[in-house]
Image (tube, rainbow, N blue to C red; front, side, top):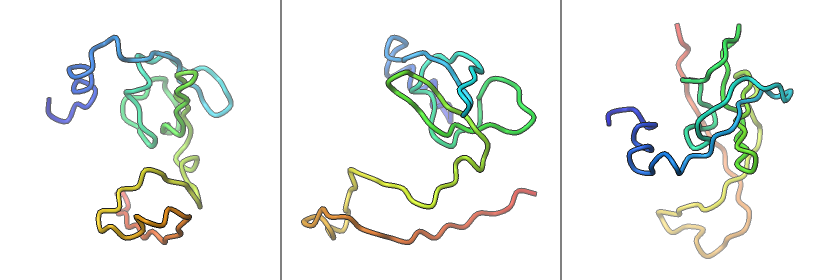
Length: 112
């Protein structure tokens, strides 16, 4: 259904597959209820309830408690992260599952 991923999930999973919970800030303050943790992604800003002077972003998801944790943009910044279940399309690294290091270069345009 167009760009509406929530409608897509509802149509393919059904309402009983969603796990409602609460939206909290980083200090543990309750902001609002939500209809399903599956509807949120890290970095999401669109569609978050609860007015705020500063934009809020999803900074963490806790599937054990169905909590969505929100914070400011700077709360999303990290210097290091870990990934798993990598798909080595080229086959390189497939037979050596040890740790790897990489440098990521990103480019973003400033919003006017």
